[in-house]
Length: 368
Image (cartoon, rainbow, N blue to C red; front, side, top):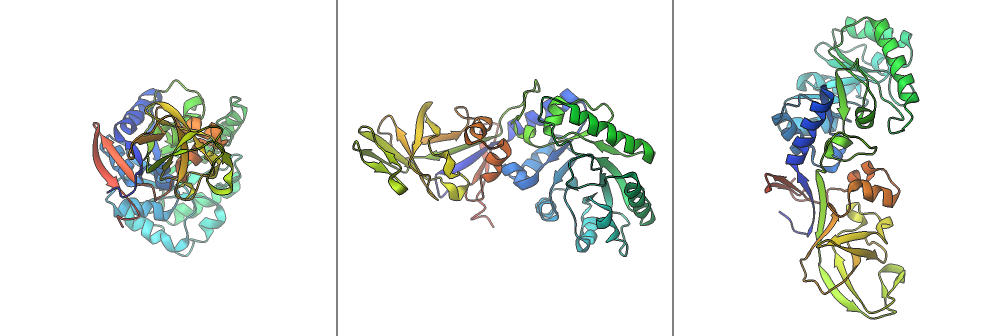
């Protein structure tokens, strides 16, 4: 239920379209990345939709994200991309959740517990210097330990640090080093994956059989590509108050905006407490296709917009959608598109659409 007239609308048909479009284009398995509540789209609802159309593997950042999916009934494969503590290994085995080997030291910590039945993917650090094993000695040691402990070595992967760059020299260098490691191991991995969304769109890796897609799965591109995807998330609010304001009067905290002439100001219920950050001041939203500027400081729960006429209370305001895309908003705020999506927190209900019909509303502040 919506108690407050601000919501994110999630088009599950577009999500399915994107998955099938990407898979058809690259002809590889897609590991669909559902970190951070599926980039703000709703992790279980996204996972369920993907499972229905054939996705066999999703990836998350942590044990709690994986367990959120399991507790909501998701049964397919889950890869945890981040570090897993020793005390959670038994849970991963019981729940059939795949672990990433992020370092040799982290693996040595597990030497005194059973790893039998634990599925693992080994991460190779080829230059990101975040997670991953860097040299062949450490990787061989990890292999020996995993085999001795009867773990299931299922996959191996790396991560490109500059896949969004036009110059692919660094990707080529990292790719070459990665396969140099793979060849030395002489092991038949079920899954080999190197490409994130940007690399999937712009870099050819003929030897891998899977890719990890996050941002592009949700219909957002940070680099140009001919792969056809459609936006999944739109963001809307409604006018909660509207008034005529005289010339020279000011708007909002600090009186930072002064009306040059008599103006009409509408207030909408979204603010930095929802993840709609203060730097949105001066940007534009849309009412019936007409641009309306955000004026005055963005408040915690509200912001004010200059409108061309006296609309009715309850008039719909588009914040992200046909008028302004996630990519546009990122450029205007000087942030990456990931931040635009992930900033939207659980004060903003998600309304899930399929076949142009509302099928579910999730309001996490209420639906505990």
